[in-house]
Length: 122
Image 1: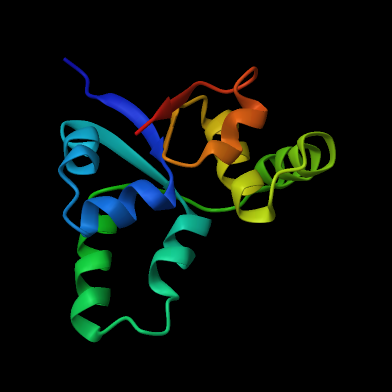
Image 2: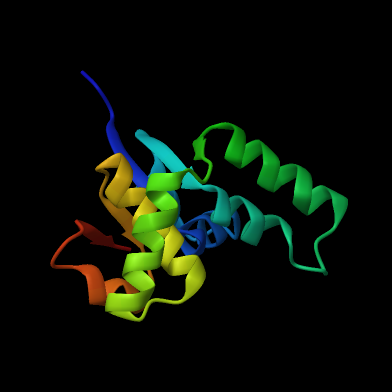
């Protein structure tokens, strides 16, 4: 049996790493895909310690990170222009669309694309 595949938004991983049980349950037994934007967001907070960074990197090592490509770039442009998404959200939504994966998020901002993207709320 193949595990469910999900693109996981940054906030879900932040909650998971912070010990929120609902976020941890949501990513267990799932093939986790991560946008490169999430990879950047998770590691860029100035107050992170080396221990925090190691924990983040270990968590990301269990996922599949999707880098930018021309198709994702164009989808992100279209989503920003037509749906008014913030840049990071547009790239994350575009990645989910490009990979044809549901998006697991705790961000209501993605409600703007729920008609074209399978949004799973935390």
